[in-house]
Amino acid sequence: MNLIIAENYEDMSHKAANYLIEKVKKHPKMNLGLATGGTPERTYELIIEDHQKNGTSYEGIQSFNLDEYIGLAQDHPNSYYYYMCHQLFNDIDIKKENVHLPSGVAKNLEEECQNYEALITNAGGVDLQILGIGSNGHIGFNEPGTPFQTKTHIVKLTNSTREANSRYFVTMADVPTQAITMGIGTIMKSKEILLLVSGDNKAEALQKLMREDVNEQFPASVLKNHPCVTIIADKKALTKVMVHS
Ligand code: PGA
Image 1 (cartoon, rainbow, N blue to C red):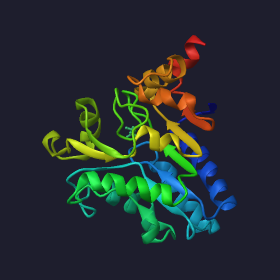
Image 2 (cartoon, rainbow, N blue to C red):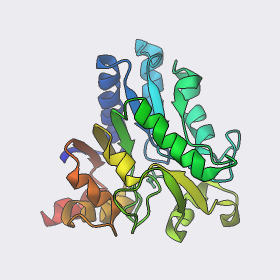
Image 3 (cartoon, rainbow, N blue to C red):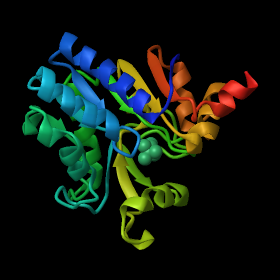
Image 4 (cartoon, rainbow, N blue to C red):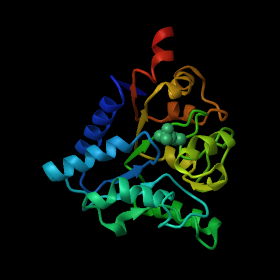
């Protein structure tokens, strides 16, 4: 795993946006794996700024998001489809038909998982997957204990994940209890992974990622088995790593 150290959230976001923009310029027909959450928000803003100023084009790009809440339709303000449209897609030239997220309201959710996995495979796989990390080490919504070979599947969200995400909802009761997520096996098939980590609330998770052996109780540890992972972490996230090393 390569580590790029950023000064702070802003610097991490610039480094991440530049990384992604350079890849897109070199490979204008690549398949991008995208993440939601607080971490990539500024990165997406910078990608929009670059698109507007420098004309970097996403016309040939296909995007595949990691996950979606079960029970929330695309037009629900808390759905990840809605998030992606408002944080990124509406302001770049990506084609709406090239934007892919699992549907959280599909009639047959098991079938939806299989279809989403097949969609990724048939498109040739994800070339660059952007990832965040949960404070419990989850990647996508793969919570601790998820077997490493999982494909796209339905998950029950842990209380800690629901609490962390409740900041986006009116009440805790509104936070969905289940989601569809790319599996750890799906994520590991990406040709390249870019993990973004920011803030002292992620310091312990990053320390575990750096120190612990690969184990299913800490899902992100699987990334050590991937041949091409870059971590961009800011100094607050690195406090526990840098103090002791
Ligand atoms: P965050 O979420 O970017 O909102 O911290 C990351 C995650 O839970 O994977």
